[in-house]
Image (cartoon, rainbow, N blue to C red):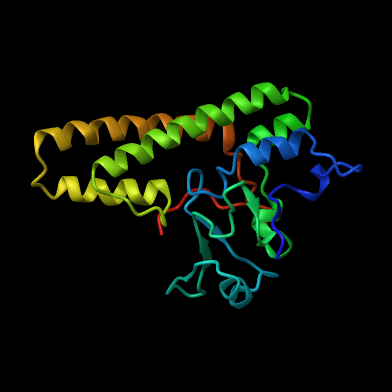
Length: 204
């Protein structure tokens, strides 16, 4: 399947050229790579079996009724930040627009300013990944918040030396700075009446 731009249909230019919204999404990918979210909740109209057959990691809760999630980082996100499952992506992926995207689409900000925010967020997420690796967590198959909590639990169980403690303090600050930026500039307010809204970050 040919990878396609991980952007919304209304963002595609009529002449086929890459417009500002597409440029923003191709520079970002934070809503797919485990930085902003731990998962995408599947709902009516989504086909978990099909999505699993296409390579997405699917988790089904033991609750009644069960909650079905596609875990992040998304395995459909390509290195160039296109989506290899764009035509078959979940409804929440179709519906979600981050705050930066909304501001750009409404002409309340310029592309250059939006790209600066993306670069800032990517720097902060890369700092978190670097510190996670220093503390022995090299598992890139889970979101940043899941990996952080896993390291936090290990550190709190005891046995870490002073150097590891200092690195964990640095990691905690880096995670806090990333979370502040994500909530202030990227997350949008959930509308409880909108069943297609993207779930906020949850630990799964």
